[in-house]
Image 1 (cartoon, rainbow, N blue to C red):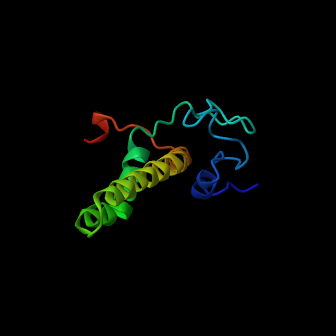
Image 2 (tube, one colour):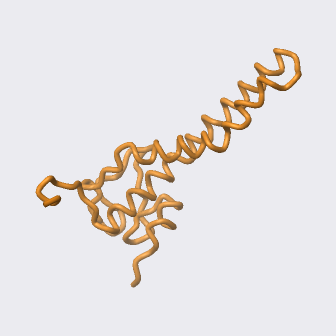
Length: 123
C-alpha cells in the first residue's frame, strides 16, 4: 500500500499515513493517534505556522477591499454595513481555512519526520 500525499490528506483533514483516520477530535484539537492506523501524532507541533499562513493569505485577498471601501462615494450607513459584511467574510475564511492549514502542516511535518533543531546540530 502506498502512502497518500500529506497535502491531499491534509485537505481532507485525514491522517497522512493511511489517508482514512480523522486528525481532529474537535475544531482544532488533534487526536493523539490516528483512530484507523494508530500513527502517533503527539510529537508533532505546528505552533503558530497555520495561523500565520492563513492570516497572511486572507489579508492579501481582502486588503484591497479594506483600503478601497473608505474612498468609495456612498452613505456612511452603507460603508458600515459593507465593513461588517467584509469582517464576517474575513472571520469566516479564517475559521474555514485554519483547520485545513494545520492539517497540511501537521501531515508534512510527520511525513518528513521534522523535529525541533538543537544548537549542537549547527556545528
